[in-house]
Image 1: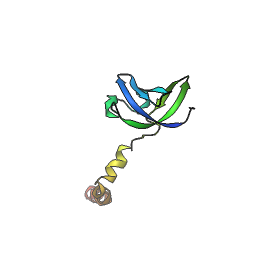
Image 2: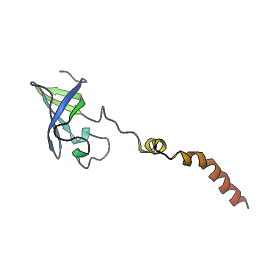
Image 3: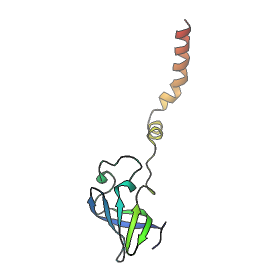
Image 4: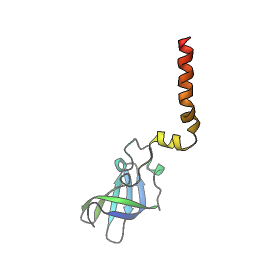
Length: 108
């Protein structure tokens, strides 16, 4: 096992500060709460649950204990990209018309 590896692990316990992971018979690890997202993490259960088997990135190896990252592999799309992809295309299509309309009204 080495730093930078991508591994599969099973979530075995969740605490307020992170989630414990069983990787195999030889390795266990911790995903610190700061390694779930670059933003505020209200609840780790918003990302994983006990029993989930997920891909993780190894940040460090200390004997048979691993420091792991969830966010390195599971990045969320930025909110504005999701909005544009999920049905707000009329806004994009109408924007220039609304700007032109506003300029005409202000010129009067």
